[in-house]
Length: 129
Image 1 (tube, helix red, strand yellow):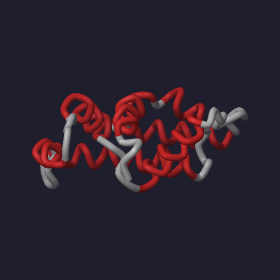
Image 2: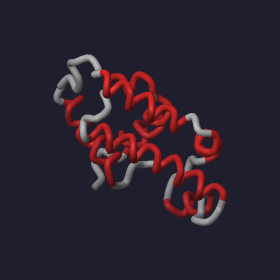
Image 3: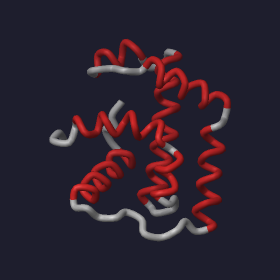
């Protein structure tokens, strides 16, 4: 899965540029408000249906192109619903990161599952629009 548009793509582009330039993304501790929001985002992730969708996603969704993606997770299918749920959750999380509402270091220290997977895909897409 690649972050093809929206907050996730913006976040990854900005983060990759900062990392290449050796910039430190966050040099401060999370505020109380950031920590509270972080816990709320985490609680959403623990919701039973989203947990089921995440499990399916990480076990089954490995498309190499759009045709494979449509075969594995076509709209209106269980797989399509799972992919949409996972993508929507992480789009929301990345939007909160883009606006500085979540503390980046804290978020990445506790949210590795998705970014290990998508980060590898993003590295492959660096030269593409």
